[in-house]
Image (cartoon, rainbow, N blue to C red; front, side, top):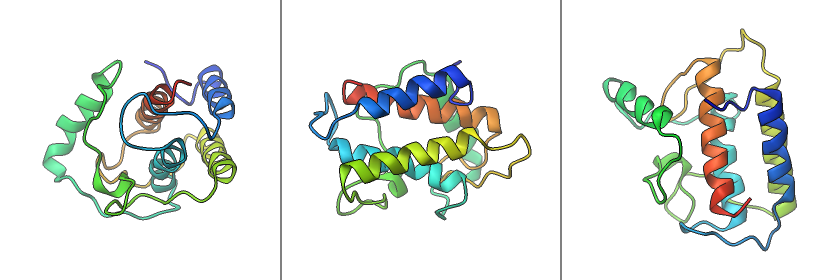
Length: 153
């Protein structure tokens, strides 16, 4: 399974993000490319302990949700989003500022995650809770890949 903690996959993902332009249009979904940058950044903010969210799924449901998220090779389009990561007026996601700044922030967050040590104490994801470093690496790759494909990158 792909993992953002593998150097080659990290570097490919970074390059895909660098290739994004403010003019990229979504192939599905409702987000703009700038909103997507913030949306993909928020789980990184949470698990690195830079933003605190309240758990939104009951603990007993998390194993089933985690297995669904981790097993799928490619996520379907337009899946529901956990509320703390939603963009738009009613969502709890970080709102965009300007494209280049938001892109830079995502790249910095990915770099911070990539450089975590094996003993780093991760903070919970609002929907998935605490995962292992390996699981978080897989999740971050899948989530980022899904949204980069959404914008043709």
